[in-house]
Length: 391
Image (cartoon, rainbow, N blue to C red; front, side, top):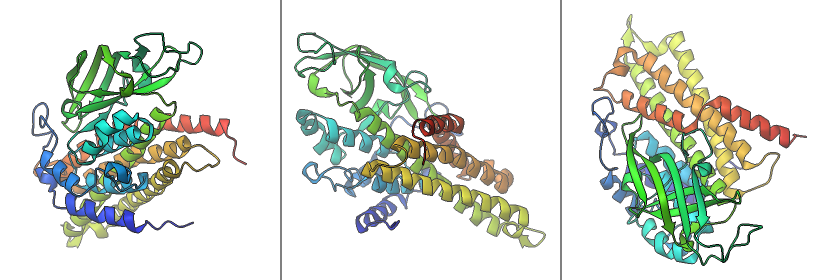
């Protein structure tokens, strides 16, 4: 088994470091210092640099202006972006573009992918559902505008009719500034489709929500929204694959953030002295830091297992959902433990708004909320183990 990253993957990491490395955490708007939303838009200047470095098209095929790489590469880049608290929709944009490339109609691909690869179009995805706890596809209904081209037994059709969507999706990241929003929906036959909604669009409205990081989220309301057939992705597994990539990418963000926070903690405790010695030399401090290092290594190992599984679609004792559940368990709990220990070891300095740690704490909390509680993922893993006995 070879855990070495390829030359292409390593080159993507170097490009990401060149783009995100100069970003100063102090320049990221703080939710503690800004009433309401920290900004009306994401960091467009950084977005342009990301696009110029070809980091938006890593997973797209060459015919669409991309490099044809995999989910592991995306996770490597997201890891670097999280270290800088990069305020760009890199994960949602890339995951949606991959779904369009893999499952979308030729017309939809032509309409979206070339401009998305250059960053001229911004894409995002709704994955929280109505409450953040229920499956996202159940929050929106999709029905054909006419039954003339529909098989009543399978719910499939010729693709010549339009669709009508109704429902609500909460907590949609970057929704106010996106040009297209991928929205999962359920049909009367119980199938899941993805609607690629242009924004703005008649019948689509957005209410403002504020995340823990202070960023604007969108509560998406669809009231008899009409879409052409080519704007609907009907392949059964399309939403599962898109959701898997979004989830695994969020785990990568948690890993990158945690690594930067532990590095900040190490630097601080190495310089802070008590009784004439750096506090990093105290046994209690060293043990806590070592525990958090173990958390990060477990987060990393489970992340690459999940990313490899969805990249290769390889078989195994469990489906990809099992590896993703394990990665989510470690990421949601691990990132919380890392920032809590960092706050503790920094003392009162960690809560000082002149120091960037409080920003990382807010972003970590948002990632933990996005991933959901570890207990729920443990239950999912238990169900998978029951359905797929090992050995």
